[in-house]
Amino acid sequence: MKVNLQDNFSISKLVIGCMRMNEWNFSIEQRVEFVEWCIEQGITTFDHADIYGGNHHNEALFGEVLKMKTQLRDEMEIITKCSMCVRNDENPNIKTRYFNTDREYIINQVNKSIEKLNCDYIDLLLIHMHDLLVNPKELNDTLNQLRDEGKVRYFGLSNHNPLEFDTLQKYVDVKFVTHQIMLHPLGIENYKNGTMTHCLKEGIHPMFWSPLAGGRIFNPTNALEENMKNVLEGIRQELHLEEIDEVIYKWLLMHSSDPTIVLGTGNRERIKRAIHSLEGMQMTREQWYKILIEAGYKLW
Ligand SMILES: NC(=O)c1ccc[n+]([C@@H]2O[C@H](COP(=O)([O-])OP(=O)(O)OC[C@H]3O[C@@H](n4cnc5c(N)ncnc54)[C@H](OP(=O)(O)O)[C@@H]3O)[C@@H](O)[C@H]2O)c1
Image 1 (cartoon, rainbow, N blue to C red):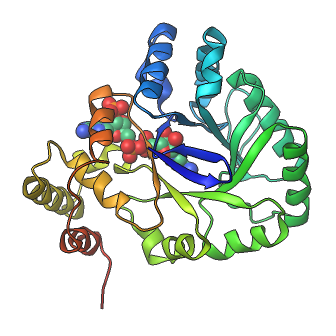
Image 2: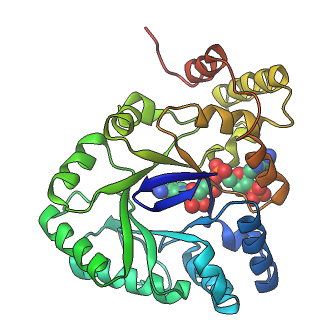
């Protein structure tokens, strides 16, 4: 299943997040097999960032797949992000984390991503976090340059509040085609701060990252998390689903903005459950609001 972001550009409703790819400990053969399997399942979009994998460089792990099977490039959409500067092997002199959206920095990061990923272009580039020192006019020139040079096809933002999003969009010629934001039953800030409503207003299909709260939902560490697990378990039984991850995916997908979900697992059984959650019975409004309220949203 695909979601159309703009013109002829669509991504798959489920996206494989590559942030933990180094933790999966796949051999190169297993990585190739995994990517091929995902594409066979209809999951054709892969989400990266220049910083994923820390010193392990997950973009390069993925690039090895494309080096081995170059034909796969035409069957997928590649997303990557930049703007977060952190200390790693490549940047050992960084002492304090910070954000950077300077022209030279972004162009350099995109060139590095393209090289590591072993591809000629990025389908979708996201500004990873809002840079408080951003110069919107300079950003416009940068994005236009990347588009004109054929290095990036489409652009979007990640982790910006509605005002930050609108301010950048005002100065940037290209339309931001998506907003990648955190959303899960232990983290509903984007419902509270108006970001989800902003997506509806602007006709933006959001991408939800850490849909399972990074796995925390399965191993509660406090009373609120324990309560949420019980609530999800109750709804799982009512819907006759196998595991609570399916309940969460169904909950995330109920929003009218037609969102996409960035999965964090490399486990095929879990990915199959995510696919299964796209089908069959939806939860009721009452069940949906129950999760929202237990997550800490005050209706009145
Ligand atoms: N834009 C941003 O700022 C941003 C920030 C963070 C992440 N992201 C993107 O979002 C993607 C997903 O984030 P995420 O990895 O945090 O997603 P997630 O789905 O919330 O968490 C994945 C973790 O949950 C574990 N898990 C899944 N099902 C489980 C189960 N039934 N029982 C126990 N553990 C389970 C996984 O382990 P297994 O691998 O063993 O299944 C994995 O460690 C990332 O890869 C990245 O692409 C974007």
